[in-house]
Image 1 (tube, rainbow, N blue to C red):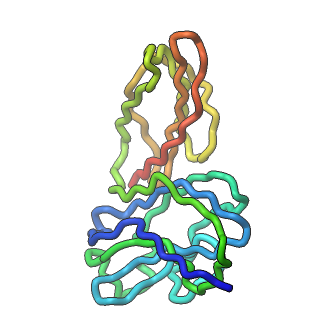
Image 2: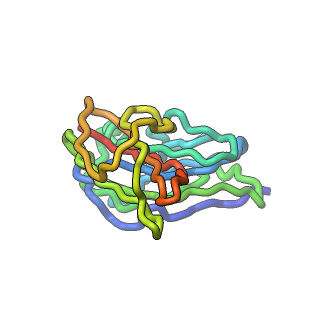
Length: 194
């Protein structure tokens, strides 16, 4: 018995020529059949596949892992929207997660978190960071690369820096050390450079 899925991700109009970078954390099981629906002002809708099958598809987000573990993805909507010459990227009505083929079994569980819609920036990227420890962070480990899960090794007391890179998705990785010398959890932040 299948269940319909429709979860609003960004339920308002926006101009994808100005704001086109979609990022979110996700946890999908192998049986997932999920897509990101792009709703247009003219009443049409297109799908960008995460995992599974889709009709009316503009393509698939690459490297989505359906292993029931947490992962992060970040991509630019514009290359998908350009696949249909009739789509006006200034007239997007909203984004939602759906099962376009209605193949999701009842009781199915999946999670999306930290959904953001942002503007791609021309390099360099100027980043600031801080630790949230009450005693105050004394040191940070940082890294800047194009690999989503890097464990940073450079140690610094800096809390701001400018990073450069070729156009594409880059990742800022950081980890804070508290006053007692304990290292906190790793954090990975995607940054899109045009």
